[in-house]
Length: 366
Image (cartoon, rainbow, N blue to C red; front, top):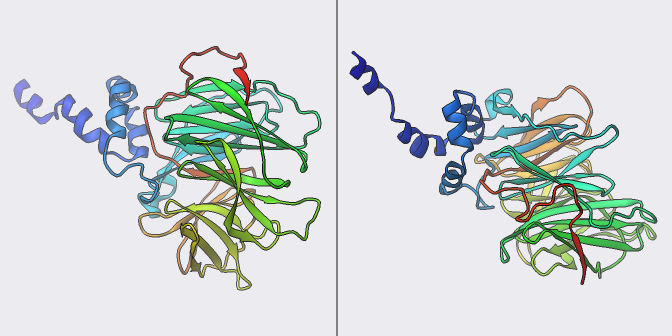
């Protein structure tokens, strides 16, 4: 009898090596709650390495499989596999960043399994891996807020140097102080802004090894809103000429199918996407969905069914856009800040190679 029972059970090594690695993110996180053995196996570095080696999981042009979601100071993973069961696709993450009273962090970006969240005034940031539940707090090398009134953060992976970099830009609209942190070296570097003066607006969009922001000239509001690019490999800025905004707040930057894009509303309240498929080649796609795009909305696309996910920043809502319709996936109940980023799990550690907890990294001036 005992032998028959054992024959009905799937061998543990088969489950770990061939079944769990093929589960979507949501089911994988839930599997950690089944038993201590599952939690231990899924949390191990060997498993996460095997999981991230599964094919068709992280190429930027592949459909969005999952999202990292921030609502106020609560964080979730959302599986995009089934649009019909939105609430069941949402998993709340058990993470506590131990913020002090009055401190707030905002989602900066996700890259190769790491999530960056940063303090809005530029004092510190976190790197967090939801798959391994690891996080680390990083302080500024030489934090100075005097004379600045605007802070922008950026985060991305430098594929040439196999390094994650965090960019902090502090500005008063006329002058910019730029610091770049390298996870690989645990060092901050000061770099020149070196392009037109202006105020960077909103969260950056990451395509390949480059971050993109919209920028407007606060000293000449008649000037068109432009796009500025930061190359994570060369650590240099340049103006990006292929997308132009008519005025501040007229549309948002986003990433569609691994390509940089601009989304705006036309007079009929249709969502129009201008997608840069190649340098100098822009393709327009119209979604007839009766939607007024807010300059702080966050859009991520495309799902495997060709739809676009949108987070209405100050309405506590995540929705889905189709070519001829729109639907609300979930409402969090309030009007706190809501943001989303495409998320792909990995086993990469958010810790610096040489760790000095709560001590500013060395600063090098280029």
